[in-house]
Image (cartoon, rainbow, N blue to C red; front, side):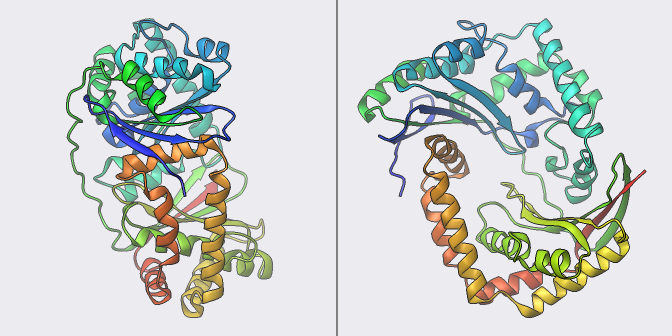
Length: 411
């Protein structure tokens, strides 16, 4: 069990503290409640661009990387559709350096027009590398609008198009920063050896005087249910065809999320998983196959990705996949598979909890979801799943009349 302390500063910053006497380094993580779902039409890619801009310098620090490295640490960040996360690992005696850096760029970020242009060029090059040049890199530009016709989840994190990134100007940046990058819209999670009262003093010193407005109110966008079966054909710079089968999953905190996650592991986690054993090992239809749940806050997707062997057409592979999915619904998930999957999930979490870095990241993530204590409670939610409910959910989820299928073919 991960024991932690939680407190909130006067400006609304939520703070999660976990003491780890065995940790060799302190981890400082700032999770902002902002992602691609908060972007405006025509200005997509803003959240990811902003992740880059936060390393451009602040009033009291012109180069974050140099300062953190001179203190013996490292830092980085990532963005997704729901949140943006900045993290630092640093020797315990230099914890103040990481806290100071994060507080300074939260309150006094300084971006020049030349710096904005530089980072836009970098992000545009990343767009070209990961979307236009990487095999299947643009698939989410097609899946997103079909799966989320009215919700901003339709936008990939990198942005909808290069033109959107190019159009972002200084006024856009100032508005985005003042709206989302404030204490009331963030969680600071720290894993360290430092005693709690010393830690609280440091956090209060660096962060409490930062002014903050109330957290921004979100526009609630509808998640359109998938109500029919549709097949789309895509052409791209790929050597091997690939099949993407998309089903409607649930919100991340919906109890059915855990059922969907167990089902994805039953179907494709490991060489003895149902789809892998039947379609890769026994029938030799696919070279590889995977299944996963996106787990988005407002509503996720259940996705099966599969690459057929060279002599198998996508149409034949698609037919074989559905035949095996129907078989999985008939055979059902039994006690042995259920317990094995849950035990593996518990093992993976226990393994992650050996790392102070992972604990700091996860505590911030769960607190942003609503409660940092979920880091320990979720294992019980997996084990409490009812086998009957699990198999009912599998029949409901894998509906041949309610899915989107994408055939990705070589040009």
